[in-house]
Amino acid sequence: MEHAIASTALSIEVCNNGSVVTRINTEMLALPDGRPAAKWGGLVFPLRDGNRIELTDQGTVPASCRLWVDPKAFWRFEGGDIGADGYVFFDGNDSDRARTARILVAAGAVVIRSGPNLSGTPGDWFIRVAGPSAEIESVLRDALGASASPEAASDMSAIRERLLVQALEEATAVRDRLREELRELTTRVAEAPTEGSVIATQRQNLDAMAARLAELEANARQIQDESLAPKRADVAASRLEAALTVMAAATLPRITFLASSVSFIAIELSDRSVIWRILADLDRQDRGQPNGWKRLGGHPGWWERHFSTGQDDQGRVYGKLSTDRSGWYILVSHKQDQASDLRRLD
Image 1 (tube, helix red, strand yellow):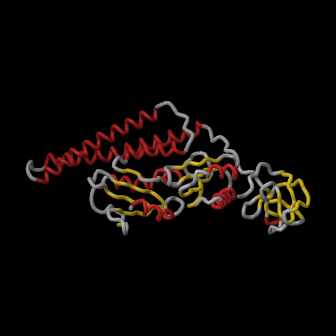
Image 2 (tube, rainbow, N blue to C red):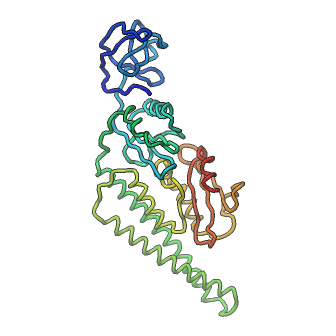
Image 3 (cartoon, rainbow, N blue to C red):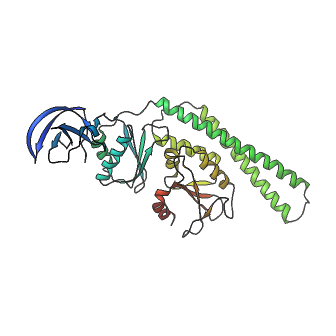
């Protein structure tokens, strides 16, 4: 495990084959790979535990190094159910991201990927970890120090407000489209003959659409009431996911998200409108092959569609119609997670 930095100016021991040669006061440097280090005898050596350098370690020329900048203290870990992936969020620069990922790997964690935290919640970066152990927070404390307080709750309230406005706009748009379709179908039913299986089917569709419209109008009112409610002190990424879940329930009532789909949407997608459009089309389908989807080989009943995450073109969404055709089971993820995702679908 790498050294946990408490200060950029340290008193360190200079050792040769384990024996202390001298003690010096020096400024912290950072090696090209981000590790903390100190200079001695014209070379820079990695800093070991106990504030010491070992002269038998490989030295690096000072021109390749830079002054150490203390990483920001804020970090947090958010895990799901036992065995599910978890997310580490923290502040810092790209070198801090790479360093923290290396520390987690060295401690035995399975790092899936890392990148900028796009949820708008505290933490510049995320690291996604597969099935993290109970010791992960201890590892993070050793690597990053004690966690500082997250950003002000007022910032989180602003995020919640924006999401609720977006949810209301989405619900209103779906409601308006359905109203227009309902008017068109009502006209066709009124002008059609009064007998026959076709008109009976149309009347059933009319009843179903009227019920769906009533449900959407109720959801829109609920979101509007929620947007006017007193602001809460929302301070965690799970609050953002909860807000997205509210929005999805209001606009996509036939969609059931599986595993960490909502977490992925909240944290790793820079443009969420793409996935909402895909799922809105699917929400209205109850048979056949969805438009733009393909069969998922080896998984009967499951369909697959690719989409852009805003960072790359490796977004994946898997869907399966429920047995009674009442809705869809959906898993939204990344191609890098495909092996574990497909096991979940078995």
